[in-house]
Length: 156
Ligand code: GDP
Ligand code: MG
Image (cartoon, rainbow, N blue to C red; front, top):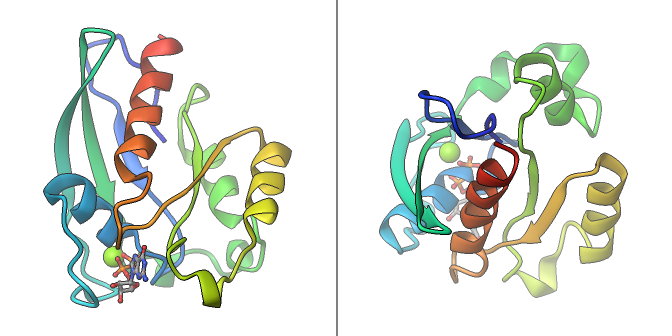
């Protein structure tokens, strides 16, 4: 997510989610167009990456932050709710935050943790956009960040 575009400060885009879901891999795939299997420590992220996307001839700079290890320091109470991340986003982000739910590792067809329909249902419930991605094959990775950029432009 990130706040609406249009003022002088570029919106921060933050990847949040449990350790091991593929946040760092998604960012590396988006930034470098490649998948480096199993090479990231769960607690060491790559910090942030700046990317400029063009939406309707408007250049949108995304500063994308990769969270890492903070999972361990989150408040214990939050950690028990399935919508823990959403709660924290609403707690700390601006009201006009753009939120997207990504179901990553969609290439692992035989070992799915979440069915697509479950992801879609959850997204509908929360009123957020949903996409299934794969940091491995690159499926929907560019699309995911582009969707955020479009939303940021749209709401400004
Ligand atoms: P993070 O802790 O959320 O940053 O997760 P990582 O990016 O470190 O990924 C955790 C593990 O899942 C690593 O072994 C990755 O190679 C693997 N992984 C990440 N994304 C995908 C994906 O889309 N498909 C598959 N098959 N593996 C993935
Ligand atoms: Mg990581």
